[in-house]
Image (cartoon, rainbow, N blue to C red):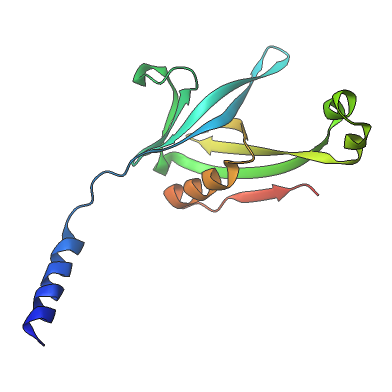
Length: 149
């Protein structure tokens, strides 16, 4: 082995053993928490923040640490279910075009079960795939997928 190759091998070994800096949290801003208030179903805009140790869900409008709605360590997750459902586009048909009645919109739902509790979220069409990928990699759980055709 040449001297240059030996130095390169030693350098790569040292770099590989160095602890990695804390990764920057990944944040998603277009998710809604669905909850029950009396007989009504309500939604609240929230931020999903994928941190090293846990999923942190903040109130969308306020980002202070005191405004954390839910903080779940990755090991506390029990089950994750994703559902895509179709719904008629009645509002679009009324306001824009009657042809919209012949097409259907899609909604992306996320059902999280952790520590005996569960929460329902509606995800945005531009973020849902990245959220699912991050949840699967952080928790190590397989996501149950229900796709309505």
